[in-house]
Length: 445
Image (cartoon, rainbow, N blue to C red; front, side, top):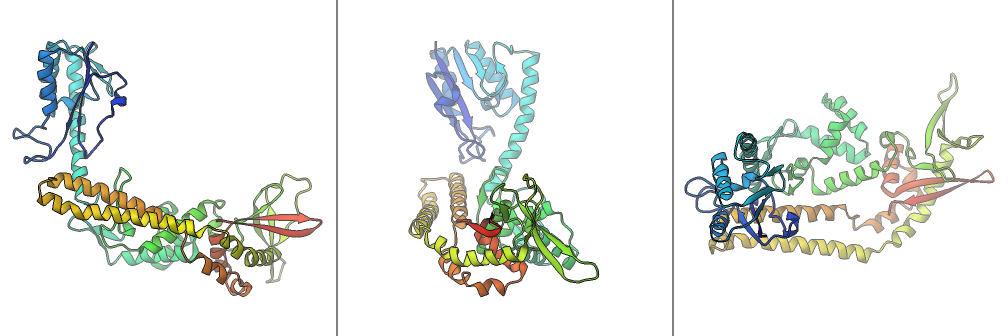
């Protein structure tokens, strides 16, 4: 029994199948690629895709019959229903049984009749969708913006995003407020109060992660091309936004925008329940008293409330004492090695990218293949730059020395103190031993 396989792959949309993907022991594989010739993309002089290996397959089957032909989808046999139907006729006349691995089709179950005709019409609709996807893929090679609504702060120009000078200051101010205070909900309220621009918290989160504001273009397949247009925020600001989002994701819901600096950070060491900040006032008096209280303490009787100021003072004292030691224990040479490795990898990709014009001039690569190669190199460079941006800043030791001075913390407002606490602290555990308050501060690194 002889089993052969055939695939037609458009490099813009997919990759060629591996031998193991067929799930059968195949004697011979015929592969056609949607290569760009001197005709329009992927086309011959008659306007149809070049499938030289398919023609070779048909020729070989005339001299030595195959029992089974494996294909992924019937539409790989041609660009029109007529082409597909004609080739199915040819293969059936030669006694070759066809099995589509990604469609519910075998030639034994679908004789050439009404059922097959319905299937072919369904394929015709799929091919129309495929042609649209091919158009989008060619736009990606030209680094053109994807279809859809343009993000607020930009408008469409000639093949790229152009800054909208009337709306971009609003977006810029939104990012600056978030970087300063680290509160998404606070940034949304600030925007509504100052500019009258009302957006939801969900929209604000999309703004913070939108690659367009960083000067990059992101496509539906999660691939990103860097530096395609003028950004609204710098790379350093984007890295800071990402760090703040990662930091806030570790906190309980709604505590990221809480007024108090210890909100969301303090837990009971014994039961691991979070402590919330409660405010107590007396009638006809302006003075208020702040306490940390557990709302879900499983103990009976429940733990008593702890004065907020006492915990704050212990936290500042612990941070000033332990933070420089924690930073000193980090392996900075290893961190530098990772950064150098990523930098070298980016430099290698840029060198390859610079060689493409010469390869086109010498005829080694045609223009369309060079575009595809350049696109892949750009996406790889963007991925490496994203990894580089997630690494801690190199001046962490100097920052640790600066914030280890008690007066630094005492001079800050609660909002500013909240920002710095969350930049370094993962969790604060409260330990009560013989009515004596002790803290265990767990740092992020």
